[in-house]
Length: 480
Image (cartoon, rainbow, N blue to C red):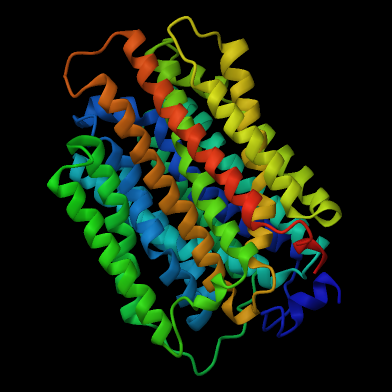
């Protein structure tokens, strides 16, 4: 069956033929670029926001996490809504919410206003992102066609994490931090129009119901989990508020699992986790994204606060990263059919953890050419080389009607992992610099940020071990 036939078949999920698969992929990749961009584009603008909006160091995290929390917490629900009520419909609703809240963010006049708009962006992204993933999975056939599509799609998303830092630096320096919000408006409008013109609405799953109770429990559990880590960064890991958040997270996530086991039509079928490769891919996705956002967050802060780069210079300094991410993802997509996901995940894990370890040796005398650039290349190559095999392994052999479910889990691992990892890394850094208002010495800042990156290296190494233990050598997802 050709890619076009797949796009037209019920098995592929499309009710009518996709008018142009290249344009469909461009729209979907553009949407994923948009939501991934918004996680990292804010990082270089953070110092300007902190100064103008009077955020505390711990409170400043909420500029990032207010987006990541609802994004991660609502992804499972967003993916399932697409399965039941139309993936293109949910995709366009999410785009609309995202664009409106981006506009409001650019107009924010107080910290509360800004944080609320970021939360709104996260809600829109939670509808947009899993349905973009699902539309790619159901539009392209299994094998090389889908791998190539996911190679482009995943490379676009991965590159956005690094490109966001660059674009954020350019916009903040040449215009204002508000422009990092305003830039989403025309991009989002283009994505909305593109979806209306080139994407056909897949056939709906008939006779299926939405698991409201499951959606509520998993959302509360995921949000509480990340909130516990965020609270720990300012109040400590043994604080009552921190422990309370983690207790709430455990209670609601356990309740969610129990509910799903008893439901005839669950929000997330537990059978998704029966496949060892898929479960391993979910864990690797969580761990890899726990370090990805934090790496660019701390490296950009180090360049500005210790090496005294301005925001524009910081953006240019990080330029190698998105280039390498795109190249690595494309290479991985081509090799996947030949060697399977396991070798790619192992090599990527070595590069990722090694790059983070190398980046952790920071000091006021750190050289950009000999320390920062090699670290950028290693981390970007490792992360970029893993995004395609992780994605393909996670959705391999999933029925079209459950694609939104699987991509919702995959996206949840990505977003919750990113928010949780950043919070954990910030807690390490704040523990060293202290909560004093006086600016710490450059050597102290370097040690703090280096320690945060060392934690990231440990987390990435754990991801490597998980891939080694769970992904079977003979599991060549691309060949199915």
